[in-house]
Length: 279
Image 1 (tube, rainbow, N blue to C red):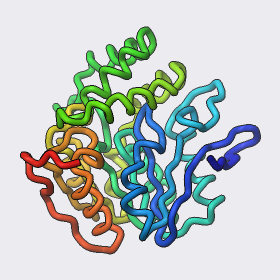
Image 2 (cartoon, rainbow, N blue to C red):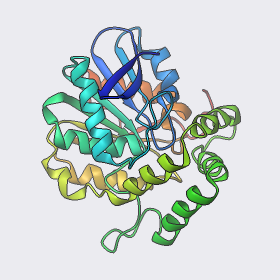
Image 3 (cartoon, rainbow, N blue to C red):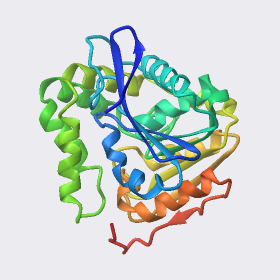
Image 4 (cartoon, rainbow, N blue to C red):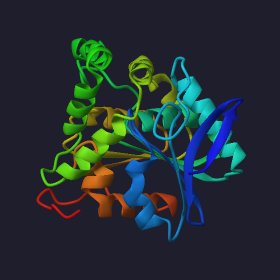
């Protein structure tokens, strides 16, 4: 697996497959680039698909320290510059989408378009936003990651899926999550809850496609609607047979919608019949 040195002594692992317009995929909390395996299979024949293991995740280095969004954005920018990528389609799932919004705000010249899936500008409830994960549950999650990382990762990934026929995929995601050290999990999750991008969204002028699973139990879909409302150049697509992992549960429709975005077409507002259980 190739690596790129983002700072002295710290390497980020990535895979670079296919050719054509570049797509950079960012995974979510306690994930890795491997979660995008189906997207690489389906799209690398036509596009250059680059999957990244964020620092502390997957095969990337895991040095001691704080894992915040500033760090992740800095690493991502070093990789994009190092690979000399231009007109990038940046795709982020969950925490990866949250990081993607921050990256597009900080480095709009590097991004041709952004796709966020199962994500939004904020994760939890606020006095001015009565949706998302309640504050007491957020604090409980941080404690759970600190005290019972393995059980917490397994429980969270169990809630990622709406479909009941993907237990083996759920188990695979759990195994990926268990590769993330507890100190990385706690620190990066703290950053996830600390970052609120709402005030910055009106300044993000690159096209943003917001994808949301209709039955997402992890990242409240109403945050997707809030992103759509606040971003000046955004579309919103719901995937009707999906929870938090629409790129798995409505794979064909999700991939087709991504291609529409890359090629400058407007994706449909609703995709994937709710009774559909095809992989």
